[in-house]
Image 1 (cartoon, one colour):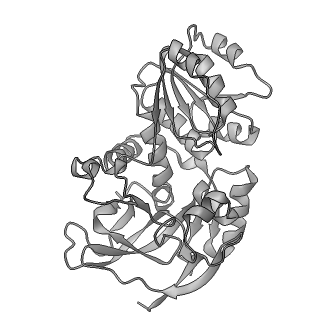
Image 2: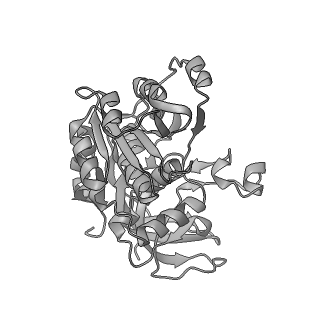
Image 3: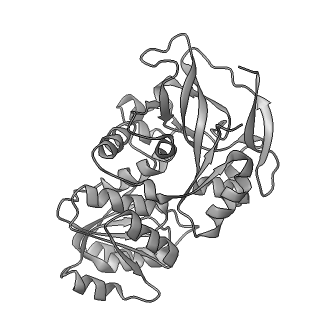
Amino acid sequence: MTNEMKVLVKAHAREGLWLQTAPMPEIGPDDVLIRINKTGICGTDIHIWNWDEWAQKTVPVPLITGHEFAGEIVELGRNVEGLALGQRCSGEGHLIGKQSRQSRAGKFHLDPQTRGIGVNEQGAFAECLCLPAFNVVPLPDEISDDIGAILDPLGNAVHTALSFDLVGEDVLITGAGPIGIMAAAVARHAGARNVVITDINQDRLDLAAKVADVVPVNVTTDDLADIQAQLQITQGFDVGLEMSGNQIALDQMVEAMVMGGRIALLGIPPGKSPVDWSRIVFKAITIKGIYGREIFETWYKMIAMLQNGLDVSGVITHRFGVQDYAEGFAAMKSGHSGKVVLDWTAL
């Protein structure tokens, strides 16, 4: 193996990413080196590409970006056990501390010292990635590299969707981006009675209808109340999954919920938003904020569901060689794509 590799790096504090050469990572005794085969482009990567206010405050320059990946182990640290050279894997991109109360209680996803690969630490848009062995998630043969490369966002969808009991429930999802669409597929797989997904982007609603057994609603042309009546949802939705970060969507969700309904929030609003808390209180609505994936329970559940018939492959709409990464980012930024996967194997 050479001592250099190709990477996509935030090399300058301005819009864009750059395909450059960087030193091959040196692993520690508790790390593995993963040769990257496929990576997914995430909304976070778009923020970093655009170099918006959040990225400027959060991301050091230079930094290898990217955190959604699948590959195979090519080097093991001397203390690593239970993994093997050549083993296919993905991995948890949140690097946790070990000293907090949450970590010591096994609630790793709540550790306040969490740092993210491709955001705070060197990431996966590279030929090779150094990752703590603790974070490695082996891939069974039934899961392709393409799906392995989107397990990170699928995990967000699974964590959000499984926050509440879904069996026999009527579920409203606001936001038909890739994670919202995958959450819809998970909700149906988990036994929801009706799953309705709303958006203002018809292309994404059409994709949702192809990927999952859902009722897509374009709120610019359709009345959600009419859809509820057609589905015989008489009192309101039992569970809401807010994936858009849009205040209007959240307001509409609150109005559409049953008394005592439950809402999981994954979407991130762009800033402070006014909230009608009295409406939430008087409807006795439970609201839960979702961050990342439950480490590693979410990984176990989503891999088990994929092995048991959950199919989200249709959410991948574009595939590019890494040399054409700019086209991949353009597709994601267009608003007309699902997930975009970059292939690193041809380098």
